[in-house]
Length: 421
Image 1 (cartoon, one colour):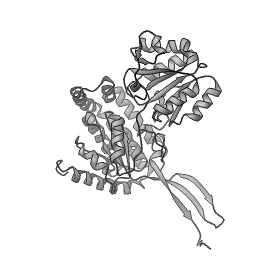
Image 2: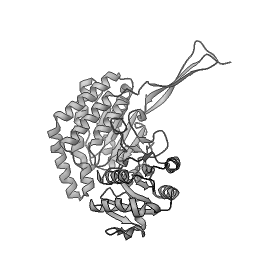
Image 3: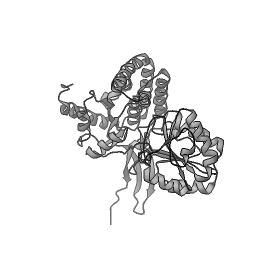
Image 4: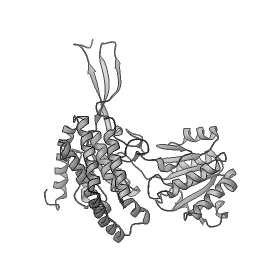
């Protein structure tokens, strides 16, 4: 590789190799891709001690950088989490191959037979922060969908991502597929990101996975098309008809299971008629669990809460903090979500079918949960094996982006000497 001082030359070379690999990968047999992912899973497990060691170096870097506890949790790799990476790789390997799948077909009176068939996008650039498991998830999903991928992990996960990436390359090698199909940007230098965003000759789409700052930067500066993966400003609305046991169980899981994931609840909206019953119980349980509750004027009557400021509405904490507000009815909750939400994931706790229907119909988020924890906002939990992120835009893909969502389509039109009149 060229001198890392010449970032432009390095990235151009990576792009050139990715485009060449994508052309070959587009028609790779499903069995070869499955074999590559299975071999990569074997390599990750065999090298788990090396990955944990690399991760320890990243954790030291993160501490020196002053990362929050939630961000450190995102960065941490334990043997259990590595086992989860292995399971994700095997799950993606076992999925049906989306490439070549017939989406629709029909005949025309002219005698033409038309098929709409799934095809890879080409070269995907993935820019992500902190979570090293994204290296495996994004690499595997792009490979499964016949796309080459250029991975640019966060500076915090530099060593962990490198160790996981080496396992993906081992899998490609074992299956006889082009090793350039998965490439990791070999520098922490942010100039590499700027290059990746403007590589229109080589990159077909950019997927940013991270906080508002990263996504905003990508959307402002990219000349390559972008899949928007915005922050998870996740709301849960508690209706008076909610089952108290269900409400308590779901809210506690949605907030406290892992506070640093994008599906973590960040704002609780409580119907005025539920404040003195379900609302009291849920907020007290959150406080007892060590969650800081930033409450509006009405809910500040509950001992232990703190006064919410205007900045608390529409805030992604990724920490043991939640905002809480009273609304007059389901329409009040919908209005608040429309104003402050990020179109990621929002949920309702209710037994009233009319309230549920109104919420689901009018909340225009990529994922709408009914009586279920918002922490299920995850491609793995949706049966996709893993995800490259949660797309919050409305173009091409929305919600968890798995292998199938990383494809486009083409029309295959068959005739028998058919000519147009």
